[in-house]
Amino acid sequence: MAKNYTETRPFVDWDMMQSFMIDAFKGYGVPEEDARICTDVLLEADRRGIESHGCNRFKPIYLDRIDKGTLLPVTKTEIVKETPTTIVMDAHDGMGMVASHEMLLKLMDKAKTCGMAGGAIRNSTHYGIAGYWTDMAAKKGFVAMTGTNARPSIAPTFGVENMLGTNPLTISLPTDEEFPFCLDCATSIVQRGRIEYYAREGRSTPPGMVIAEDGGTITDSKEILKRLVDGTAALTPLGGIGEEMAGYKGYGYATVVEILSAALSGGGFMKALSGVSEDGKPKMYGLGHFFFVVDPEAFMGAETFKKIAGDICRELRASKKAPGEDRIYTAGEKEHDMWLFRRDKGLPVSEGVQKDILAVRDRLKLDYRFPFE
Image 1: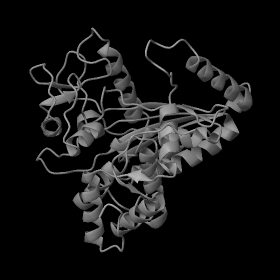
Image 2: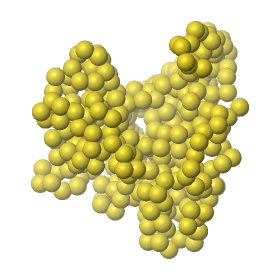
Image 3: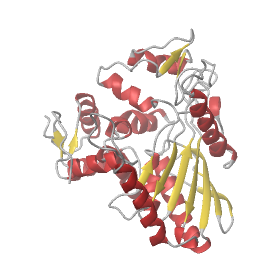
Image 4: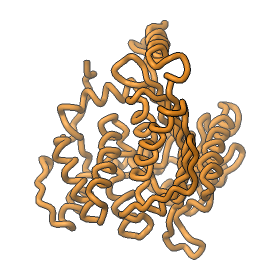
């Protein structure tokens, strides 16, 4: 049963938003089937309440980059190397979501035949929420893992320079429940998209999430975004500044994702992914992603895996709660609750996103009238 959430923003029907976004992508030169894939990835983020990666990024991260020439609307993937269990793909600066969708379909076929498979993509672009890809496999009964590097944002422990991307290490596990176990999170305390969201909403970034050149923390969200670009501020890894709260663990995991994303694909890493050339002009991002898919049937069977995974999650939720707390969650549960809540209500749209939607509509002369107008 859906949890009740307080929501004051106007809702837009999912079907209407889907049609609009597909038409908008097409208006920017994205082929229709690719536009459907990209739209579904973005809307799934909003369905789960991950608004930093949903419609909030539709215009600035995708449409604006197509405008700037740092993202190609037509994705021409190339298989660079392939074995019975592996694939290396070059996305040639096209839509990262389109290349990832193709990759997952191929890897699931290989894993069904061989028990497991792995793939890597180079010269790609932002591929949306990482959990979309692992859940795509988990819903078919597979265990899946993915990670991606990104623009330099995180400073290494004891450093202040942004070197590593927010680099999510994401895993989905099928269960016998309504939703998979899905751990989808950045290896920084906060991801850049969340700060973009704070800035659009006029909110401060909580202290301790961003480190300045002097080693102190800063909270002005708009200032943070500027300083992340010019290199005078950096996100802190999971655990925070220094070693006291084990920030070296987040730093270590971010480095693992950076290495796997770049080294498996033979692609770029760290400063090469800034999106800015040496003369300060926009350039292609050249991101790398990696994916691993495992068929539990090749071990003790899919049903055994799902039952044990579900039992573990249920026992965790049933464990003794802290005083004042009424519920313990397992990964993916809160997102499922939000999905249930928003399923029939639609997409809540903030003022900043409303402006983006209307700007895109008017530019493309699309025939839509939204309930917030």
